[in-house]
Length: 364
Image 1 (tube, one colour):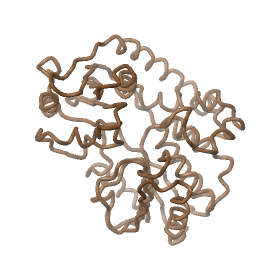
Image 2 (image 1 turned 60 degrees about the vertical axis):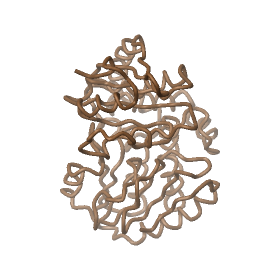
Image 3 (image 1 turned 180 degrees about the vertical axis):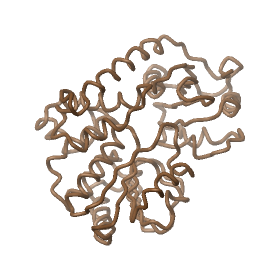
């Protein structure tokens, strides 16, 4: 494996090596071969995916497909592999989906661009891993920095900003961000973040619309105003999510008897659990908060865990109990202070018991 992983290395130093290895990977590919970009469905993942989709075309690659992960799908599952293999890629770019030793499509040349805590090292791959850099970049920010020396993507900096603001917020430590805000107007960037994320949070899970907009729009204002591209649909999705959030915010948390965990039970067809976990994270700074949504996927509890505590590593804590999970990769991934996943009801109930919750936390 050709790995780029740093431990507390300044980002500008790490980027020099990252850019060299990314360039070597891409220049070693046949411009006529099909490159499939596989990305996460949130604003950061879609931003990174769209940047590679547009950037690779500008580099001269003639067959580039951008594919997003499906709702509840583990990117390293057989289902995801089958979907990607059917596209017969000559090479893969996998971004914002994590890094595991098994890899996505073994035998297919693959570039991983990611910023999450890694879970092993895939063989025969090039891995650009921002986890451990100082600061840790969002995936879209990292994608932009890797592509900038290889193609003129200066007009696409707004896409990187949308992903970065979504993942890291207004105080994201990207030196280029103030200039991008000034160029494209902070209002339209914020609106684009909100609307792109609304599509994956809404019950329809319409990811194709925001991806197409990021691939075709000439700036963030089009995401809000160009109804021909789908802006009207995104506004409707946002309204649905806001209604569901208004209900969910009234739900009181449950507390573990002997561990620093709080749990907020939810029942919504919308992906609101990350937002609720984030809300309670700031209100309960001494706890790790799990927002558990029984209504998002049939027979499955979708949950998000967030904490403000730097002494807690959520993926490790969630994976510690033996709950008999059929797919260990379906939960306990992500960042040290932001994790979650999907578990069948029996396994989720075993997890809450192991974390010190009583029967009130169980899903029937």
